[in-house]
Image 1 (cartoon, helix red, strand yellow):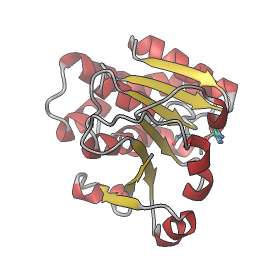
Image 2 (cartoon, protein in one colour):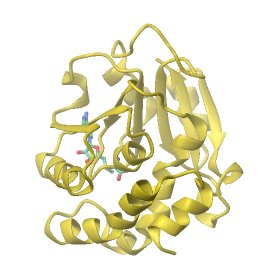
Image 3 (spheres, rainbow, N blue to C red):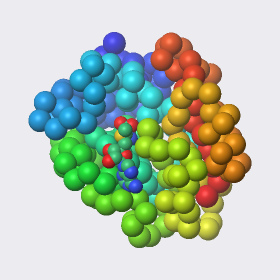
Amino acid sequence: MRSDTLIQKYFPELSEQQLQQYGQLPALYQHWNDQINVVSRKDIELLPERHVLHSLGIAKVMRFLPGERVMDVGTGGGFPGIPLAIMFPETQFHLVDSIGKKIKVVQEVAKALGLNNVTATHERAENIPGKFDFVVSRAVTQLKDFYPWVRGKFNKDSKNTLSNGILYLKGGDLTQEIKDSNLVAKQYYLKDYFTEEFFETKQVIYVKG
Ligand SMILES: C[S@@+](CC[C@H](N)C(=O)[O-])C[C@H]1O[C@@H](n2cnc3c(N)ncnc32)[C@H](O)[C@@H]1O
């Protein structure tokens, strides 16, 4: 299914401009992936479902507010940050990765889409200054290692439906990982929102900051 058609199926309220931006993603990533590998080659054809819609699982759990600041840690080529920045154009997204060439792809994609709510930095998450309302992430590391990177980086005042914190996309049985982290984590199941088989075990894990 085309990227914009698939996204519209689950987010019918989107504007023409947003649909156009989602529609541009497959060609943009095809182009950049040929030069700098940011999405596994076997996955690039499944980009709308496995990368774009998967990233937007976070948007089913959390509607970011205008003016909120969100950091995407280990964004790679821009997931989940870029699909979320299209969905929430009045929220500021700061995309961070420790590999510079991936950040170059993020910057080029954001520029091509005309996204003015995205900044991208080549840096380890631990070294990023400033405070955020939420941290999002996918496929970077275990919660027990991840949490210390972002501890202390959250604004004290929460304005949203959940207190400021981490929204992490994960799959599989997470019982042991959550236990090992010693954190209180709330699990949201993406199969409650999306019918594609890919989402069967996929979750958004929320941890208060
Ligand atoms: C498997 S990739 C996932 C990329 C993207 N989030 C996605 O789901 O497509 C993991 C990324 O995390 C980045 N990374 C690992 N440790 C990091 C750290 N401490 N700070 C920032 N980025 C980090 C790596 O450079 C890599 O690009």
